Image (cartoon, rainbow, N blue to C red; front, top):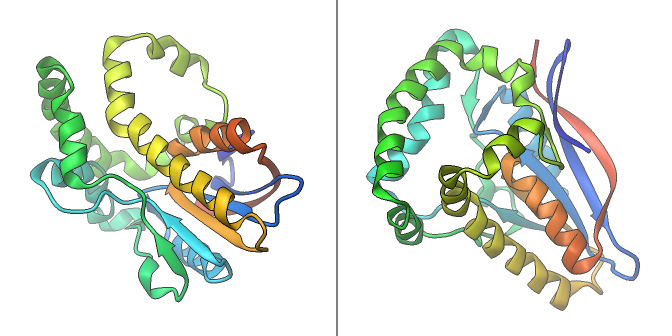
Length: 234
């Protein structure tokens, strides 16, 4: 199942609706990118206003580490010719109940410190290189096949999945945060399954495969419908 699609017309994100028999609650997954065209975020915001509850990604608090990591994508809109903007949705101003089960800055920093020092040093060295590459080639990357994402790991993912660095990286940037999110979604299933509500899950596209697998394995939710939103036109 495709989550982010690339084609000759541009790059698109699949908004996925998940249902299960016997439950009135439905999940609507919005695979997000940190930067996109303004039209993409406007389309997402419009649909979020129609939902009953928002579950939104976002590490709370500020830190030098967070600033450095987000710099790798914040530089893309700094290139005015790109036509891109950073996610500009004011989620708390949409008039919809919102929860944020993500980790705090302190919790993220704790996971970061658990990585071997050699990998942390490698990350600090790579961040400036990635930022420069994104400034000059961010739009080209968003319109290339490498941006595609499916619910199953690609051959490239499998090739690197056995490396020690990949294991530590996934645990710090994905695994623990995904578990926090799935725990929050499980609580909603436990307490609100009898309500006919749409629960929007607004997380980075990279988290979506784990969310889909987790909701299927734990609660039997399956994708039943998809709507494509254009991230960027070619």
